[in-house]
Length: 597
Image (cartoon, rainbow, N blue to C red):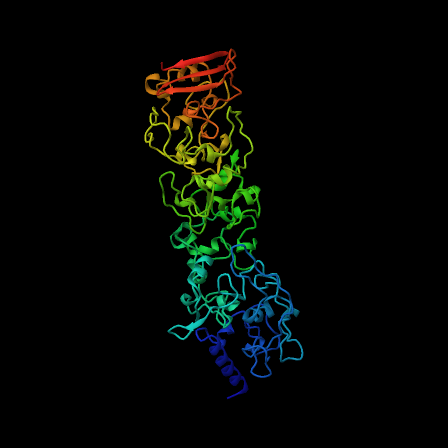
């Protein structure tokens, strides 16, 4: 047996001892890891004929490193990955990762071998790994973390044992992995290598001797087989992003420039995440601007809904106005900077197409944080309005109302409270069991979503073809339909289209159907808008009473003033379809003006 053959046999034995399920060292001959003169890639030696020598040597190897290692360690200090959602804390690269970085960080010459007195020369005078995806540099903050214990919230292992195949596994408390959204080590496929210290290393995902799957991966990334071997996002398997067969229509930009897969489901994690050199390091997002990670598909080129076009309308939820503010683990709105991002309302790992009945949260908005009707933070909302309350309740991003009300309130949680004298039925059934003139399917027992009023003006709620939801609208307040609030507005179906979505226009003008004979006179004869008397969200019980603020009565002080004769300004409910007003409006003094008596 020649010296060269003995070298290959010895090295093959070492490799099999280290990773018995992996391909032999001879498998690298046709890959870019073959840096010898026979290498197929553009980076190769001009003189060295041995293939394995660039990493291993049978003689005079380093004694402080296993695998008959033939390279120096980098002396670099690495910036490491960090994230608020990661329970473990990565340290400096160790083990196999440190060995990989002796080429891939670009600080040590490719030809600087432990058993050579001088550098092995390379074609074109190349010394270091060229710039590109394979050159990771010393800033690893934008790369998947390595040398981190596969243990949630700890750097140590609890205990170890072996499974039936003899492979070492680590016995960690199950809740730790559930909290970290990881599979327990005992369930990992054998291709995923956790080193003897229980740490994830470069070799957990990459096999340097086998490039049969591309990028030296140990498992395919199609349908996120590789990512899903360790990561276990709750409800991912039933999410739209996991199941979608949507494909890219070919219009620029390419949503998946790093893969050859066709559908959202096939790309899976790679639709949004980039494991190396990620533009947005924290959580390895594929775009610096968080919303662009969503909009590269939700622009009509992949997803059926074009959300990007909605964000160009006159009124939007301005997700593009914020960068790096939202955090998946952010706490109460009182402790964070006001902002709105796609992920404030949508959980991309768990979003699905399931429908719901108000006020229950639909699948498109499920599993995000919110604020309850009592004002307490909730980790996962049960009701859709709890999402809206994050920004429009106790810590409202709006600081004033455009209409100057007799009773001023911007806290929608208080306006919709079920103890109020009146409110639109968002949290529960309305306060008025005698409400008349509702259009089908609405009844006095109906509950509605905030998005029944605040939504896309071209969405399905307005008989349009666009996406639903409050992404953008041409109407003020992100309203789905027109709602005029200016005095002296001529009544029409267009002027109060929002009101007439639920309330029968003819009934509102017919005293026999509503019990109030003056509606027609006010909105047609006097051209007074609905908002002159009615506050559409509701009147808080802390500010109003059932006697004075039933029927959403809360006067617009720019239109309605106190009685010119007595200075009084209030409405008084005297029973079903009966009441009186003290006020001055359009020059008419009501002191009082009675109806229904």
